[in-house]
Length: 193
Image: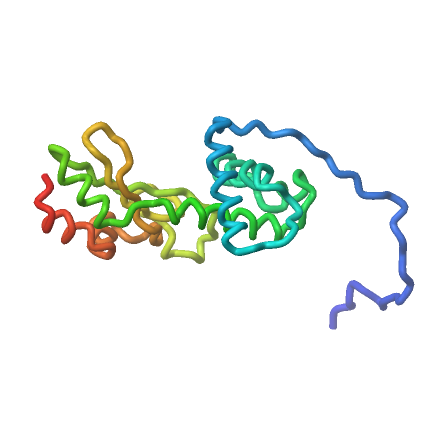
């Protein structure tokens, strides 16, 4: 019979003598001021339509929060500490800004009408990398040898974005993702090269 490593337990509470110290650093976000003003105006309009009350961050600060997450990849916890808000508030503000921007995006039908005026259109799939564990097999792309989300992108001949599909798990191949979103049928119906 083996002897247990722990002989007992204690109900005594211990208090740490060391305090927490937070280390902050500024992050540079390479976004133009006109882009921030545009997003800030969209957020202001959205808040007016919803008739929301006081918010912790102004529209301008919320507009800065969103590209800091989307472009720089800062976590919600890092952003919450930097902006002086809670993690759940950071998540909610970013989701609200993304929703405001997504409302401006064209539909697939609108993109097909634009693409029909061009000599040809380019359809390409891209993998947006994510940090997933090995158990998430549906997000693992065998082609790229990493986890991610598959997004189908339709551009004009000069590479300008016309439409981007909703993301699907990275294990789904490009052709299947294109069929899932109805891109192949839409391109065939619009007679685009």
